[in-house]
Each structure stands twice: as C-alpha cells, then as structure tokens.
Image (cartoon, rainbow, N blue to C red; front, side, top):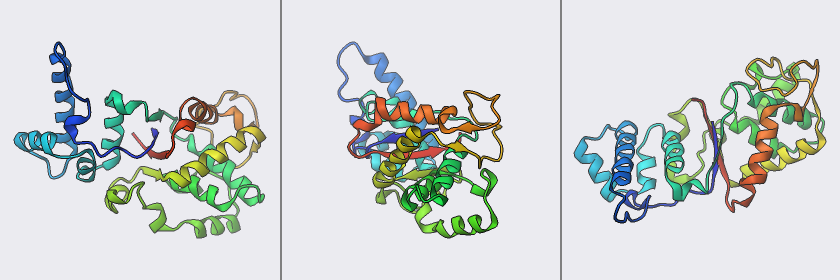
Length: 249
C-alpha cells in the first residue's frame, strides 16, 4: 500500500470532521466509534477509555501520530477516513513484488548513466527489503548499490516531528519527503516515455503483468507503471508538497 499526500494538517482531532449539524447524529456516532477504536489500538501506551476521550478532546493530529505505533498506520487511516483530508491523499494497492519493477528499471538506468543517483536513491529508500533479492546485479554492481545505502538516510521519516522511531518501529515501511517524491515521479514519467526493456527482474511471481506470456518485458507492460502514471496525472501532480510512504499490509 502506498499513500502520497502533502503534510498532514496539525488539526485538533475534534476538527477532523468539522462541526456536525442537526440530523447527523448517527454519522457523528460512527465517526466517534472508528476514531476511538483507532486511537485505542494505535496509541502507546494503550490508553484507557477516559484517556481516549481526552485525546480526542485535547490532542492534535500530529500528537496522535507521534504517539502511535506504527505511525504510518495512523497516517494511512486518518486521511482515508476523513473526507476533508481525502482529497489531499492518493492511495495505491500494489502486488506483493511490484516494486521490483522500479528497482530493476532505476538500477539499469543508473548503471547506463541515464538515471541520476538522487532518483535511484529515492527508489531504494521507498523499497522495504534487500534489493539483491529482487533484481539481477553483478558482484561489482551490488557493491556499488550497497555504497549508496545510508542507514541514517533510509531511516529518516517524512517529517522531523515524527522522530527516529517512525520507521525503526515499522520494519516493512518506506517513505519519501517532498524532494525525493518529486524525483521519484520525474523518474517514473521518464521511464514511461522511454519504455525500456527490463532484464534485471529475478522473478515475476507476485508482479502484475499486462502481457505475462512475453519472454521479455518493457516498463509499460507492468501494472505498477500504469497505476503510478494514472495516479500522477489524476491527482498527485496537483499537490504542492507531495510526500509518499509505503506499508506492507
């Protein structure tokens, strides 16, 4: 699951849905129910019923995310559930190993001198596992890629206020800040136009393919390529400060 959005507004939780008018009591009850359940299951240490009430009444969205584990689950659920935030959020469900397509394409471009290191590192940062398990690299190339992986950089959350535990507490997550998100989509747009052949993918199991019968495949043959371009053209390109995160669910 990937979600791409500008910075979350630092609303008090009570303002998430705005004011409730007459005739909407049942809707308010539904809102209260899911929000209470989300806070109770996410905030650490686990709050009592009275503490959940206090969080909803007095705490901000930022505070709640900071005190949740995993943080990105809270950041995923809030925009999805709240209509006033949903317009600033785009989500994408991907197949199990779809990101290997982006790893293969960016690695090939990087070693051909066509993809700058900043764009390649953005793809690596969003990925959640060992690149050696997904793409074909020579011994020398593996050494080069390992040299690009800065642990402190890859553990850096989207927003400074999230703290160091945002990613360290969630093994299967990756995220990009504004600059890296723009680099990421610049790369996707260029790969879509060039439509290179992808030879580095080790295994297409768990990868969405439009033409699975082919022996060799190009960038546009993969579902994730089409989905990302659609996401960009329909919504993300209008975001002033886009950010991205990915969770394995």
